[in-house]
Length: 509
Image 1 (cartoon, rainbow, N blue to C red):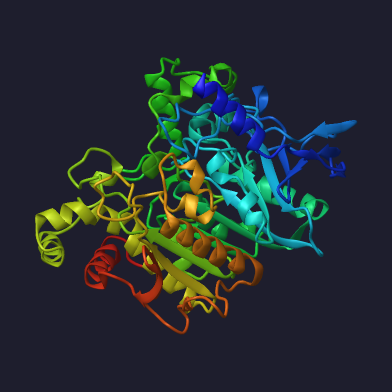
Image 2 (image 1 turned 90 degrees about the vertical axis):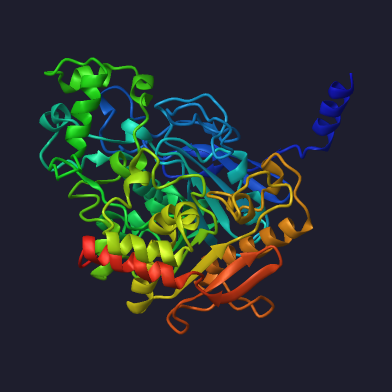
């Protein structure tokens, strides 16, 4: 009885969306709904359903529709494993027919507004733009238009096989279907966002984890050039080595070899053709889940022609203002002795390099606790931002170290992905009580993010100054429990050693 009463009260208190005037887009008319000063359009298709013969094909244009399309409910999430409690995964259903996006804009606005396009993380295996965590209402109230997208995941989004290669035209891009979807979504924004209140000439892409990797990949993807004007990378790696589409390297099989190995394990005949692959039920491609660090990042030669670090080293990245940063205890639970790609990335250290790092970390315990986070996130973040600033572009580095008092994890800092509800100011979605200091941190992060999206500079006269690395090399903004603080990059000595290691094993990058 009490539960029923509480649910009834919540229904009374929850804002009831009001219908708004239909809006004409390129492919047809849509009708969204407004609540608390924000109008939302959900489940808008930006590409044709990639089903049947369109599985493992580049995204195709949306077919026009007649009448008024209801845009008040989210579309299906893309095919993926169970969420396992990740708040970045939206509600079911899931489907291969999932290439939709969602838009939030202030009801009252004077002229076109800056646009922020969110690319969710999840190792290119899970996640969606429909999670409550990524509701764009709070950011929209700060004067921006927010777009969240779904894109193909796992082996449906990042995959190749000789049978597929034999079935497609020689000049058709392949392998990176999820990245192609992201580019198609940005093209949709370019062509449609003005009708929904956004400025197509002022678009910021931002993403976390695999979504942060996606942002850096889009920064080096030739066909994405000009579709965005600023970029924000949250915990987006940077030193990862991609699989080539068809060329095997020692210890690094190609995407096609990985596809053959999966087919063999799934019981497909060795001579399976493209039609047989496309006839396999989508859920069959979920097990075993492909590891992000070795399988889901691909240099295909067309969409992505080189790895991110090589492009940045050569100055071939997009010439746009950039925010890039990491959390203070990213992968605190992964040890260098663990199985998997992350646990192997220190295997190439020489005895002398390992001894120097052990000393820098104060012994084996410190090394085990921090080396993976530093190798995967912290040193690459410092390196990419230095390269970008040296190329002359506005560049801002951050470190997130806000830890709620209610945080039960023994992480000793802010764990991977914990900054997301602060960026979106959606603290109510995390499932544990958060206090005023958390709200203050959310106000700070959302403010810096939206100011950057507006003008390419996150600062305001009343805020702690976030230094541009062009004029303050090595200085970042740290988000702490006591508020933002500008300071030199922590632990520079051990990051210097890691940079030297990378220079040895991957010279010129």
